Length: 276
Image 1 (tube, helix red, strand yellow):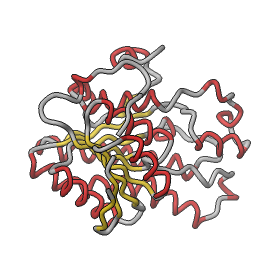
Image 2 (cartoon, helix red, strand yellow; image 1 turned 180 degrees about the vertical axis):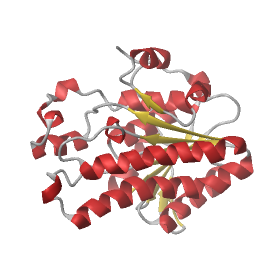
Image 3 (cartoon, helix red, strand yellow; image 1 turned 90 degrees about the horizontal axis):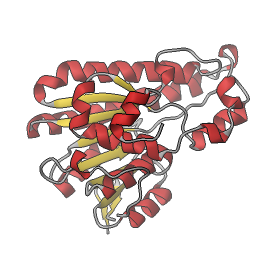
């Protein structure tokens, strides 16, 4: 099904996330509605599959309408494809409106959309490209939070999960745009927790480590820094952070409100049922 209401949408569903299925994490009460940004590939697509496998209704948001529709078609009748540019607040607000109108509520927002370019020595960075990274990685996170905020507050709560990075807490060669943006996004998580906890809004960041996605291809192509020299086999599957996000959306996330949860921590991976 495709409906026009600002952004276009399509209904759909499938199964198959990595690792053990823990349905109790998401099935605490009524069926959940989850909106995922950057859902057309990588961590976002894996997260959509993981939540759908747990019985959630998923609203898939990304700029790549073709890939988004393909994923929605694979996932089945409980998925919406909503083409959207997260750097534009009106589009994000419209996407949230469509999701709520279709599913009746919004329980979980996953802020996943992000870019890493420009990767370059500080003195060689393009100011416009640098600013565009902030528009997507920082403004996009804020736009998602802001658009979901009133909906979640009025319904008595919700969960905001933001995909973070170790780059939020330490500088990396050639990554000034990305590091700055992830540091800002981490502070947005802390700010949302400070003001949202009393409203029942839970805000948590997830730092997955290096993940085998298209972004790693861009990093390898840059040839800058130690991470660009890592072999592809050293990166984790996108299914790991996807499973972690499902876990954090449940009661397991209560212990990490306002924090950045790192999958590099073996004890956290064990709690989530992930590999070592």
